[in-house]
Image 1 (tube, rainbow, N blue to C red):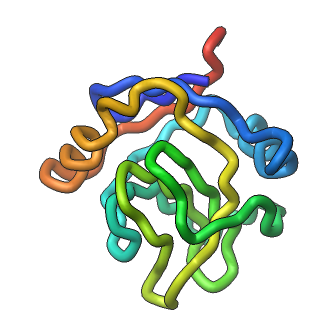
Image 2 (cartoon, rainbow, N blue to C red):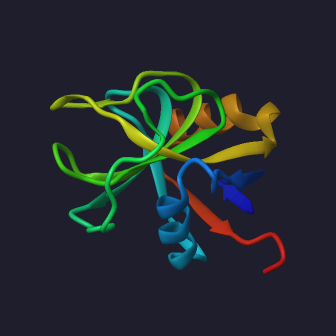
Length: 136
């Protein structure tokens, strides 16, 4: 799967064994196009707010402490539904406190651009982001 974030391209894989329902739901949303903004509470991460979008999901393979290149989906509940794209040190949280999101996607290529992508979003503002299948 390809992720185009601003001027940067990343390649990743779905964590289908660990988060099968989240991966299936995400595949139904492809191609997914949005804007990504810098996180307010989660450290070195950017996020895609989805408001009250109902994913129909519960927690699976969820974590508050994702690694560089992990992408989480918070299915909603205490805070709004959102994607979290981790580019550095991060502890997933909102104004309500610590959150856990479903780790469903892991970058496999493009790690060398993660810090630059995060800094671009931090200093220049919202960037376009597109998730699509590699063969699409």
